[in-house]
Length: 474
Image (cartoon, rainbow, N blue to C red; front, side, top):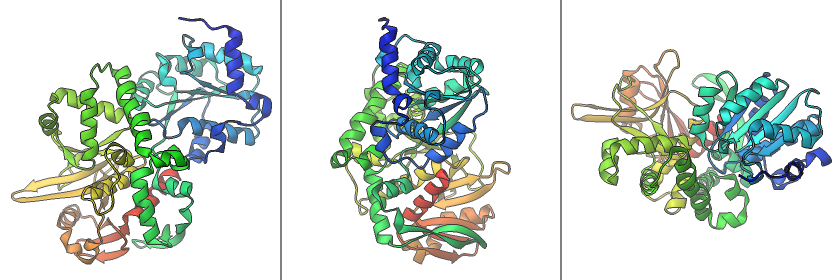
């Protein structure tokens, strides 16, 4: 192991913290548009109790480092002294072999700030590259009560698992998802086609949204599904010319070939890659370990591990099943899997138009992606009774009651607005569970249908995705 001279380490740290000398963040990130999650993240960082750290989790290339720098910029604008804001990228080769405490020691020395003088903010980027980081960060939290630590990393599950085990009571997690549809609209400058209005929602006056140009919103929604999940692709015209190469090579391949093998000791990544491609192609469909094993030739036990690994890396989300009475199954035999970013499909295969057969599943995937980060206790309903079979796309169970309190049927069709009685599974589930209302998405139709069992509220899928994304960031 090479021991780099202290002078070299300090020089690098000064270079990575330009605000110490200039009072501002001068780098490429400073010019990028902030994610909408900056406000709640900033609020968490600045109100953190003493002795706690924020762990910023998320998949590769969703803007975690950028959000750190935007947070630093906001801290500077709020009047925090520049030399009390310290940033370090843990994966820099120059720092290899150093402990977190040694890194902190050098940072404080490089900043020339008095470590005992008031409140400090320390940002550790890509912390998963530090062995036993969670143990060392907990020690720092206990030892330096005047420092608010913020750490980020892409290997979500490994980070979360370790932080929960070793940092109980010390770490607060903040998840940054791929770009939401509302963020995408803002980045391309078309968010003005959706305007806030006061609406009546099942008898209550609430703040809602109206669309000035439904056709244009749907065009943008289709673009988002194919290309819109990563900030860099949206903001860089060169990358937009070939987003598939960027997403596949710089994101998917690195997670499957580097991150997961490194964390879990996977020797042969071909099976993992083959399984992921299969899941991407069938995103939003129902799976079973038995069928996946038969189709891929991979042992069922291995598939179970790989599904856990893929979910841990924020590449997929697994949705579990309830029956027609909203009861969970004791034995999990089937489940749905969604990719966490619909644009991965276009990267791995090719972009789709709305007339392609697979597009309906990508619409469902896109809508679910807006809900997944902010809605808990979510399932899908699937049951067989005699010769009848029923399914409902999304059912949320109340935290205390464990009874359905929200139902969403995700469609990319206006047919059901004209023929709502064809939604037999949904209507049966509503009646069985005494649910008086449900949301059904459409292509462009908005309105209410009063059925015998309750009310169906039809909302265009693009608008519903926008609204749920806004709920997530507010």
